[in-house]
Every structure is written in structure tokens, then in C-alpha cells.
Amino acid sequence: MRRLPIDSGGDFPFSPSAIVHSRGGRLDPDVSEWLNLFVRWFHVFAAILWIGSTWLFTWLDGWFGREASLAAGGAAAPVWLVHSGGFYRIEKLKDPGGVPPRLHWFKWEAAATWLSGIALLGLLFYSGSDMMVDDAVSPIAPGVAKLLGIGVLVVGWFVYDGLMLSPLGRDEVGSGAAGTALAFAASWGLLHLLAPRAAYIHVGALFGTVMAANVWVRILPVQRRMLAALRAGQPPSAAEAESAKKRSKQNSFLGVATVFIMLSNHFPTATYGCDHAWVVLCALIVAGFAAAKWLRSH
Image (cartoon, rainbow, N blue to C red; front, side, top):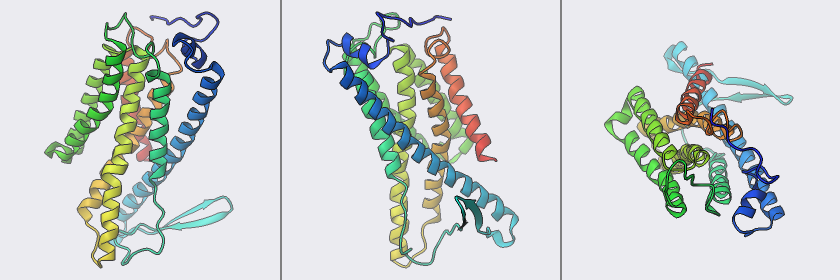
């Protein structure tokens, strides 16, 4: 194990105050510390709302799917839930027969999580020069490293989206294997160019970017077109509904892997600071996917 230094002049090397001092005192240490903490609070709370709602609907969809396969005619019975002193009756309708009087959209949780995550990424990694690079890994310049980090998020989304829109994207197993291989390749490349901690964080940020883009670029437009069809007195497109469901399913897998990667940030000697950082990162990704697979089946 290659262990990272834990003490550096009395400050933990990754603490906001240490970062500020090393950057020439741009921000007052107390201001930086509180700003960092506030953004983290907001980011974690928004992520809880997003992941929580995603997994509630994931569980409901799985339940309705199993019930429909057992029921005569393929129609699933309503789900009854008990919570907080009340009973809840939930039905899934592919065509409600008209425009619902009031719809609750689940979209701002994704936007808030991604925007706060990008703000945190900027605070920790892009506002200075020492967090993105490591001379022991690569001689890459700090400015180039920052552009690479941003580019990975942008290009990564287009590569993933292109894969899902390609003929291979219709094969769940094939596209899953290809997507996992691409994630492994991106992890390997980043760990050979950026500082190890920055590489780990950017893989997690890439997953989060894909998830948020799935919501805003591929899921919400489908939902709006389904609503427009109802207003026009037409049934919603089953094919489009299935495509939105596929992206939501992929988000449930990416979400667990992202949590695993982000939590690893607090255990450097076991993850990004060890001699086998790439193997550990790949293992975290696979473990996240496997955990999501198990959760979806229970």
C-alpha cells in the first residue's frame, strides 16, 4: 500500500483551509470552510431526495412488473403502502385516459444535485492548481488538467448517449457490458493523467452528469410528449415510454456506483492512494452495479 501523508503543517492536506493556504490565500480560510460545508450539505440533501425518489419508483415499477406477469390479462393490482400513520393506494397507468388534473414532476432534485456537485467540484479542484495534478503521476499542466476534467464530463455524456442510441443500445446486456468497459477505460486514463483523488472524483462526477442528463435530455422530453399526446386525445407512445424507463433504470445502477465512488474519497489509503487504485475503482463500479441489480430484484 502506498500511503498518503496525513499531516501537513497541522492541517489535513485535503481540508479547505489547507487548500486556501496553498493557493495563496484567495479566500479567507473560515469563509472557504463554511462555503465548502454549506455546498456539501446542500449536495448531500439534494442527492438523498433524488436517489430516494428514484429508488421508490424503481421499487414500484419492479413490483408492478412482477404483479402484471402473474395477473390475468397483464393488469397489475394497485399497491397498498402504509407510512406515517396513513395508507396509500398507488396505481400505474400507461394511459390515464385524459390529462391528469395535477402532476408532480421529479426533476429539480436531479438539477439541484448536479449543480451543487459541480459547484463543489469547482471549489475543491478548479479554484486552485494543486488538487488536479500529481507530478508522480503525470507532468500535465494544471490548466490542461482542468480542461481535461471538464471535457471528460461533456464528452463522456455524448459517448454514453451515442451508445444508448446505437443498435447496441437495444441490447441490455451488450450495452451494459460496453458501458462498463468504457467506464473502466475512462478510469484508467484519468488515473494516468490526473492526481488520483481528482481521477476518482471525476469518474463519480461523470456518472452524476450522465444521470442528470438522462433526466433532463432523455426522460423529461418524453414525459412532456406523453402529456402532449394526452392533451391531443391520443395514447402516449409506448416506445417512448420504454426508452425513458430504460434511462431511469440505468440511473438506478449509476446512482449506487456513484455513492460508492464518492464515499471512497474519505478513505485514501484503501482506494485512490493505494498501489492498485485503478483495480479498486473498477471494483467499486462493479460492486455498485451488482448492489443495484440485487436491490432491483428484491
